[in-house]
Amino acid sequence: MVSCMAGQASSGYRERNSTADRALDILLLFSDDRLVLGGQEVADRLGVSRSTAYRYLQSLVSSGFIEETKPSGFRLGSTVFELARLARKGLGLSEVSRPIMRELVEEVGETVLLTRLSGSHVVCLEREEAGHPVRLSYERGHVLPVNAGAAALVLLAWTPRKELADIVRTSGLPPLTEATVTDERALHQRLEAIRRDGFAVTRGELDAEVMGLAAPIRDADGTVVAAISIAALAYRVPEERVAEVATAVQAAAGRISARLRVIEG
Image (cartoon, rainbow, N blue to C red; front, top):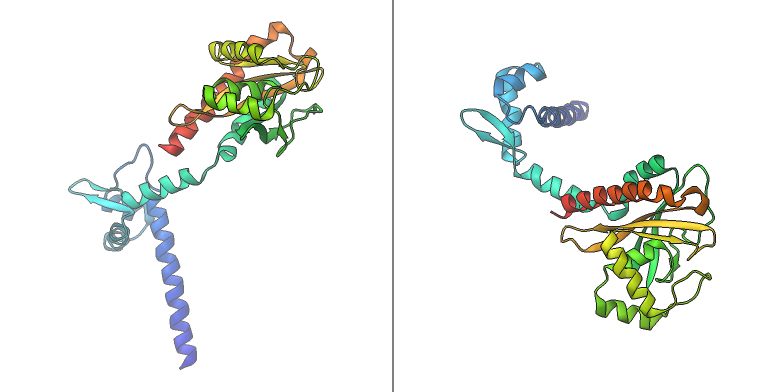
């Protein structure tokens, strides 16, 4: 008796898995070119009878994964949209940015950084190395002053004026190299130029002999929430190459911003 019941339980387990597999097979039939499925089409593609296919379809209808649109067939339902929303929401800035950072490394051949403001400092969230690593103050998780480096200046450039004043008052403008901006008036002039240009370029202001070029990343509201930048030995990015690198960095920032809009939308 126990053996018989165990066999029935095992059979039921296999049937449940089979039904789940069939349900997933049906959901995966949808595509850009196939937004609506007919019952017979599903039966043909699964290799089952029309009545069996209809049973699977009704199970998906009852759970909201698909909905019936008479007389054309079945389309994706509200449950799928909600799961997609949650999946997008679960993606963070780093997860969204890393693939694009790797693309930028391949494009320009230099180390790429992802940074954001944290209180009165700048924190490095991610770092993607090029084939020739550069010794930098920016390491993943490191917290640095706000007045040195292209990424820091980009983040300051779009910080509200009162908040910027509070940051400067709290952290000061410490000299990290001879090229670091330490005068508040000069800093404001620099930030105004960055807002006008849409990107920042620095040479030796954080790490001697290292140049940086950064662009802002914006969320769905257009607020600057982070910066993407390259860091390279200065001789590798002479003045005649700045425009090319700036275009690549700004394009990468735009792609990350677009993905954030999708997630947050």
